[in-house]
Image (cartoon, rainbow, N blue to C red; front, side, top):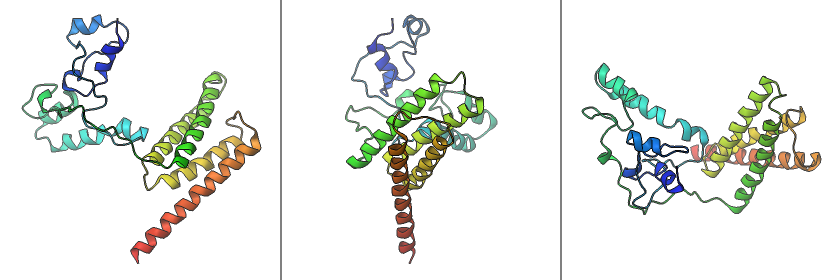
Length: 231
C-alpha cells in the first residue's frame, strides 16, 4: 500500500525523489516498473526550480514558455522534437529524461516562498476566500440543475478569484485593478441571481462595495504615483 512516507517522496525536489512513487493506492506498481524509491534524506517539497508565486494560472502554465524558448533555441528538427517529447531537463546529447546530476542540489536549508502581507490584507483574503468557498460549495451542490453557460461562468469566476488572491499575496502591481474588477464582477453575479451567499444581503453588498472602493483608490494612487515619476 502507498504510505505517507512513499507519497512524501513523490512530492520531493531532492534528486532521489524525482519521477518516483506515482502510486495512488498500491505502491506495487512502482516497484514493478522501477519508479519506487524509499524515503531517505529529508524531503524538501516543490519543483526543482522554485516557483515564487501564488498565482494559480502562472503556477499551472509557467513551464510552457520555457519549453517554447528551448524549442526555438534547439538546432535541427530532431532536437526540437526531443525538447517536446523527451523528459523535463533534456538537452542535446543527453538521453531521455536528462541527467539528474544537473538538477539543483538540495541543501535542506531552502527557504519556502512566503511573502510578507499586512495583517489587514491577510484577513481580507481569508474572508474573501471563505465567501468563495461558499460559492464553490453551492455550485457543486447544484451542478446537475445549472445550465452549462452558468457553470462555465461560475467556474471562470472561481479561477479568476483565485488568480486575484494570488496577485494580492504576491504584492503584484496589477493586483489592485484586478481585485477591483473582481469585486464588481462578484456584485454583478450576485445581483443578477447567478450565485447565493450564506450571509444577509445588505452587509454582504456593503462589504463588497467598500472593497471595490478601496481597490479603486489603490488603483488611482498607483496611477498617480506612476505619473509623478514620469515628471
